[in-house]
Image (tube, rainbow, N blue to C red):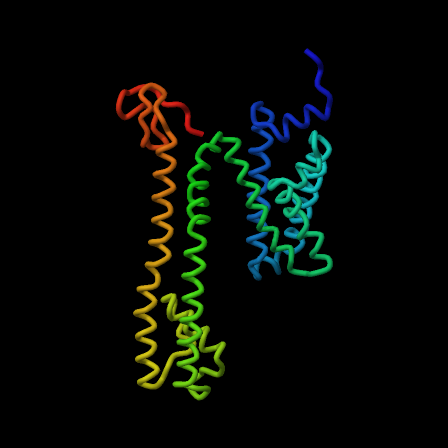
Length: 272
């Protein structure tokens, strides 16, 4: 058996999860990422930041330098460095270190380091949970299939809030806090989505009547996108069930996580 080079050994440890060393590396990486995020979150608390600003500064740059070295080593040991750099994880790994360096030019951008949490998604590879990602793929495909209907729905809502906001601007006017049509549209959006901040409210009887109508309309509208997505999701799940066929009797319609045929009891092929 040929002896592996240093570059190949590094690749096995950093990119692989089949070896103990690779698993330990990824677990240590995830723990380090979580620690860096904890430091970032605590440093955003003003009282702690004033008291421990130097410690936070050193820890933040310690983590940044560590992740920078890790990114460089990944580029070095990858058989196709540019392919890694352009991949999802490669881009996330790069974004995970950039905010610290950008903060020299734009103070405050270091809080964008929260994107490091996306790197924790590697836990799916470590724990061999990648097969469960197919459920998220079904949801994504359902959303993509419903995008036309959703676009029509949001266009309709956009027209409604513009009309309702403009009407309330005419009814209430600047004297009651509705200083412009954009401000009134903001009120209509807040009301129709049933959020209701209460920072501006109608004062006249006609304005209150329009507000009541907008609130009731909001409850009706909320059910529309739910129904659209649910219908597409049901259709996509039915399609997935039809794809699972028994090799013995050719029966279909099995659940995606089924192991045996619902008719003859034969073992089903693994559905990945």
